[in-house]
Image (cartoon, rainbow, N blue to C red):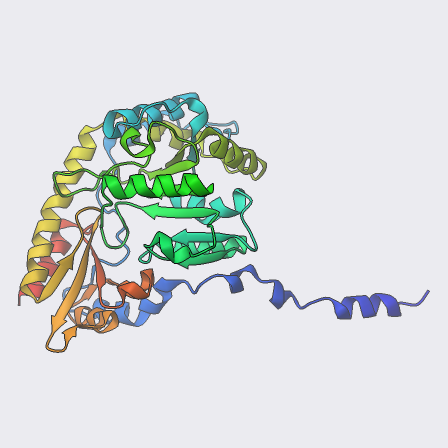
Length: 388
């Protein structure tokens, strides 16, 4: 028997390089900061890293105790999670954010919000020929999720920009990363109505909802004043990384329409996407304790105030930034607002590393995102360098 047909068949197969999923995805933005990071590290007093915004303060002791107590966990967890985990999240949404009418079937714990955001479109059956919308200034993972699913995407803050096309999925982000902008009630309600009229799934990324710096707290999309008392067609994503210093635990959840939550559950359990049991016990402890949240909020507020004053004194203008863990800053020079990469370079020479605004879309080309999650000592170092 000849081997020739088999050889021909193999030769006609497309190269593996043409099937790389990574080629559909945008470049990983943080790789572009490498040279500026090296410059900042060369400062005599060391780098002040205000770029990524990772929490540095201790995980609350009440959470650590819960994790230790649950350390003996020989069995598999379930994707749906413990009833106690879901109940704690539901109670937290009601207590802290006025959410009503949410049942156990409307909440699902997930292994960090980034994983959920990046995979949601794919898991909800959105793909080629579909359209996904997200804000003009946006966390890059919304775009990644659209590309992973093979869907079209549009970065815009205007609903009219979609023209005759109807998006299958629309992302909101309030409070916003990177700008810290908070969307008001009327705007949120308008978007909910627009999506429901068209059958568009609306997902609100609310991971910074407890990091607000004004007397007007951000609203959840699930707040009855926004949702009209119905969770149909809407989901909210929450994370404990920022509010509770649990970034290393990967504790998050999605809540809202039971039909959408049920579909995510049906897909995710086939993939073995399960939050480990010890982390769930830690998550319960974090959600049930408000004291540590208030302490951490006060710590961040003090760091934010120092850094904001120093930046403004050094010729920066702070836009939005009414919530989140960042200052959305623009350096003013003689020619006007400076290009974000020039600002990154200027700060790197002072040993301060920040994120360029164009990481988050073309609309951020003249801003930088400055995190205030560093230690008090490093924030003080940044302030000293900015005021020299």
